[in-house]
Image (cartoon, rainbow, N blue to C red; front, side, top):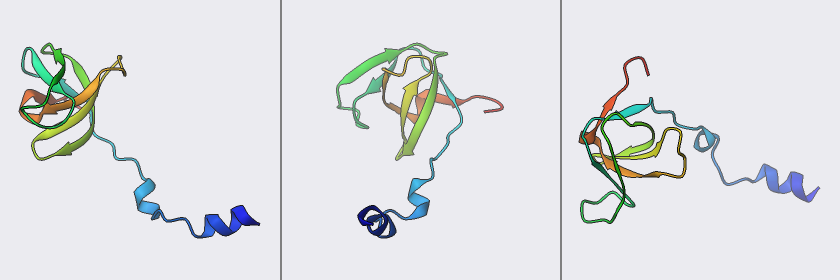
Length: 89
């Protein structure tokens, strides 16, 4: 009964549970900086070579939060200008 009562009063709107999907992208700049936070003065967590395939999670203010395709332990923020879309998504 308690679980039913609480589930009826869940604070999340149904739309907030929908996952956003962004098409894969490719790093277009050689030695592109992947940073811990979306700021040019932030520490670099990795340097990615041109051609690296990434999965964007969030796009905001000229920055893309991403995960490196095939190595999900490498993630962070990169300037959107250092990326290009993959044809056909």
